[in-house]
Length: 214
Image (tube, rainbow, N blue to C red):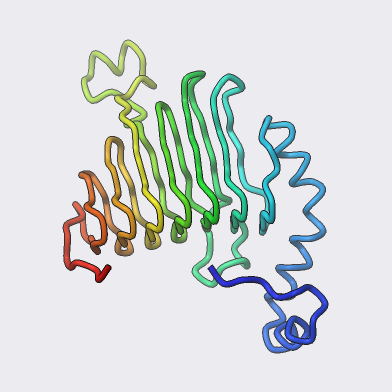
């Protein structure tokens, strides 16, 4: 992730002149900061070091669940904050008292959603592309009788995303998968099975298309 310039440095001022939309994003970020801090406090979440929030995310935390976001996180929740255009704010959701959603340091995400019914663990230096969804639950049962009994009790299985994973835009990461460290998920992929370390996967369902150098 590109390191930000010092706010009032010559480099920052020159960058603002060349790319005024970025200057607007930064201004909006600073003006929104007090409200963002209140939002996370009300959700019972610690404010991390060097967080950069462009627009307010949506936080849906079950009060008895675990939801943590590491230092140096960057969440882009407005259309203007990324040229790919977030279709809605970033959503972080824990649905049950026993849900555990843990996200490591240097995490980046634009739009999209992470929905946790059981357990989702995301390591350090993970980047999630625009409008991607990560969900460890089917939300709804497959059988007709089960849906008639309880429409919201879909199957859930934990998801693990290891360090240095890059997930492209418009991907869908489904329940029960582990994505190995350093791997890349191609844009538009649907991940239904485990992904080894150090590979590129793409497609629906996602398959290994190449190995990456160490």
